[in-house]
Image 1 (tube, rainbow, N blue to C red):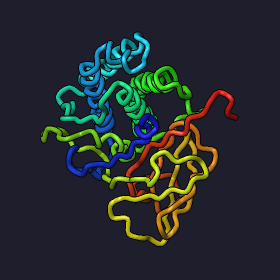
Image 2: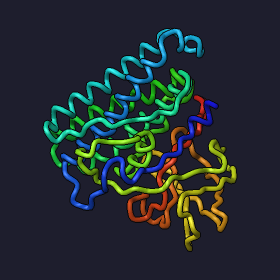
Image 3: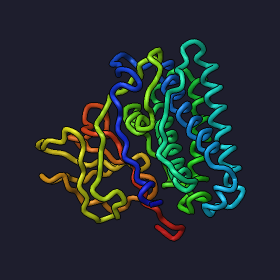
Image 4: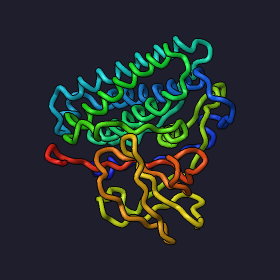
Length: 292
């Protein structure tokens, strides 16, 4: 169950965040998108920690201090929301109605790693869109905290590796949106449209594939195209594997830690709104301290 949850397939809903926009992305757009993600994380921790008390965490096998650490993580996310609300003023996005698929503290902890990983990748990818240096510095400060959260949850919480490598992977706004939107049921109609494009859900025949394994990919509207590939994002690099006529591929070697995967029709450019055919999935490839 734990490894099953570590694989999370997400789909970008076409309506919950209003319609995508094709206009030039502004610093306000970036801040509104960041606040959308922070609202999500804030709601996740506040609702989850309300649902599971200290005894529930201990009964699930966690040391008594783990829940207190998660309470601190939740406080950080609430501070991020407060900061971004202040920066945006009347243009701030409002929180949505959410649904988080966890039924016990173990699943809550596992899901938290996915959310923090998305936050880390979203801030990293959005850095190139920011023109104001003051906003960029503030975003970098939040990013470093999100990365610390991911490292602590992965290592202390789940007993996995504290990092994925020398670099973390950046996601485009649409890529991050395709992950976060699974948990959103409904948003206020007054919320501004986000600068994203929606993509269909991506599913794998084996949700926890190993390196070298054969796995099938499916998504809505996956009629055969002339060429299709799986793009596996790790750090600043992308590894591609060919999809055959049955939408099968072999998981490439060298994948470690948190990996983002999507289906594309062109491997001459990193995944983007023009070449992506599906939303992203997150797959974990845990490794120990002896891995080289």
